[in-house]
Length: 326
Image (cartoon, rainbow, N blue to C red; front, side, top):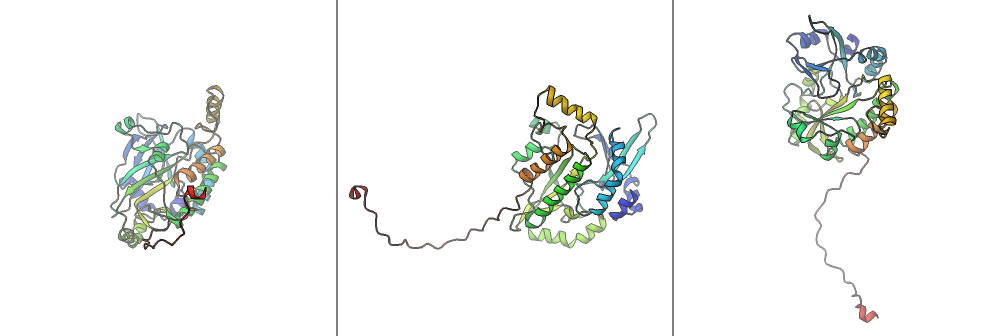
């Protein structure tokens, strides 16, 4: 993990300061079904998540290949950046094992943005809807159906759009190869007036943001995320924060039995249930992202309408009335 942190230009002094200078905050169960606890560093740079008894040995098995993939694709990959793995013993309580990762929704110092919408996208519409009652009860992260019904798209224009498509494809292939399923694309959307000055100001402060947040990727170059753009490059009002999360769920015997029970006993569509083969899951995930989530960068940008001068009608010989032609 020291080598991974060094690859992302995180020195040990700063990492320890973030994790230990002030008490961690949070300690609450996340909104997902895993029941794991989440903690934040005092500066919100890092998130710590408890691991299940099955996630820990699986992570240890793939750690070497994860390290190789992350260090070779550090600036481009959307996979979570794991910076440490620790064991916490508290007298009178169970032993916790936590993994420390980057905070996808960390807004750089000096940037005034507030993420107003959050979505957890798994690439399925089955049981993937947050109701109004759930929102009123405090659920803040919406799901796939909410995203589609809201008419949302991640619109990154002609430059970043194709790059995101290729990177999603590469990351999904890596996850399929390592028998990983049940991951999500976590998306945050912040609203900001669409002005050239705002993006220019962010670009001027980019060097400072890299110094403050050294582990930023190519998807975090504009105010901590990427500014929305039309296909012709016109800047829109949103800033996107996104990345793939929850990549430590192996397609193990428990998931295989769950798949068999739902498909054969409950007679559910075997391609649409949550516990599916990693190849099926990955293909479904990528297909959904390209068709329902990403902007279609292959479409031609709409031509801007220009006022037309009125032309006098051409002299055409009048058609004979129907009675005359008869």
